[in-house]
Image (cartoon, rainbow, N blue to C red; front, side, top):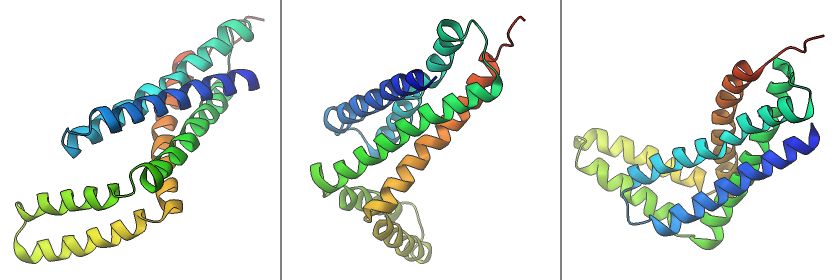
Length: 171
């Protein structure tokens, strides 16, 4: 089971890295909202390896059987590997490759707010935005948020995969 978890966790991690880097550099001219949607698509595609890892283990290594608990454990660990690697990649991107990203991102959000909110509400929202910017400028908090986001999506995919793929042994 360990080999399968490591193999499919690595596949998920490599996929999320390749797709994220391609998106950051190849699709950077798209609006932030479109980039955000593509980010969630990237996460979901990368976490499809949870399903494939559990299925591989069930069909090729465990005689066609896998319990819900085994599938859940495998899926969570595959998701965790993918989440940690993405959290590290995101921090590397925002701290080394594109250190101006946070300023750009928050300036873009503030500009969008200016056109849609009344002045009183705008002041409140801009103050909240500055707090968020300060928090996300901290690499540890940024890592935690990004890794947790990937892991949360991985949890959902894991639960679905475990329900779909569980199969009792025929003994």
